[in-house]
Length: 132
Ligand code: ZN
Image: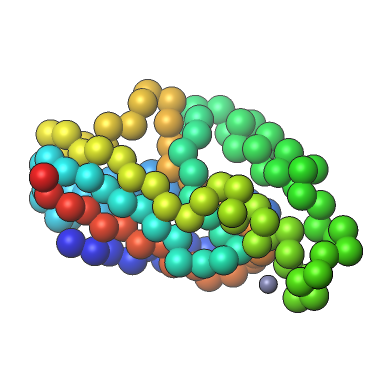
């Protein structure tokens, strides 16, 4: 089963909590045991898992990634979004979460974040659930 999530970002750098959408995709497919893959088919976005309880954590990650990789630093890539490509490689574009009893085995404080680094844009995120 494969599902494409539509993600609308509103800022240039932004983490968007997609945990609920991934859980809905899992419920729709009815698979109880397996692996849920979350994949972002973009070169200036990513996906990560981190704390969802306190929104300040995601803000701190976004702000510190921008401190590590400034927007304008005389990059070779002249499209104006070299920082976004680098941040995408730092977060990565894929995750997998084991599925047990029809639920994602996320920890209590974990959320799944779509990571926008070159927004605002309309994006896609792939959710593929494998039974096993
Ligand atoms: Zn580019």
